[in-house]
Amino acid sequence: MTIEVRPATRFEDVRTMVGPKRPDANVCWCLSYRIGSRENLQLQGLERGEFVKGLVDQDPPPGVLAYDGDEVVGWAAVHPRADTTFARSRTIPHVDNLDVWSVWCVRVRPGHRGKGISHVLLRGAVDFARSKGAPAVEGYPVDNQGHKVDLTMAYVGTRSLFEAAGFVKVADTGSVLSGFPRVLMRLAV
Image 1 (cartoon, rainbow, N blue to C red):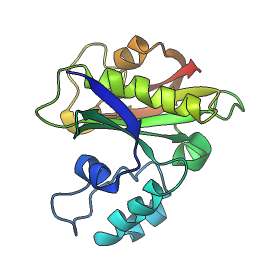
Image 2: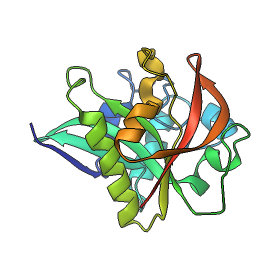
Image 3: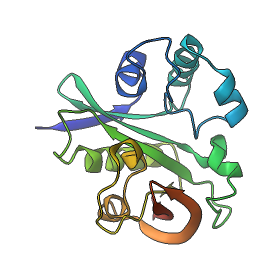
């Protein structure tokens, strides 16, 4: 198996990874940290997908996709922190004024999990941010200390996933997800 990570410039593939089974459903579309809560709540049904389609057409696109051949098997949201809600977060601290990029969602399709794709995705997200001039990349994973994380909340990643990619913990946060504290991890690129 050879996994290739590419910028998320194909809307159909982004929809496969983060869109709903029913096009009119109000699922996340990986917008919860990308746009403010007011705008996120106002976007309903098909509008959510149209909004994401607009993001895919921008430079930089909203993330990266992992492919096994021609099949999309993974997604990682990565973008400048300044363009996300982390820029204004009261629970995820700023450690300095560096124009960091954030990785806030790492997702692998069912049937492809347990094969190391999340590790490849995270490295691909870092490489993408580096190619766009990011001085550093941050993530805000749970510090689950080896305990199982509820699958619906595993999208933020685990501390060990980020450590395996060379990230180091630089701060605690005030955020807790699925009963686990989130930590701020950073990698200079």
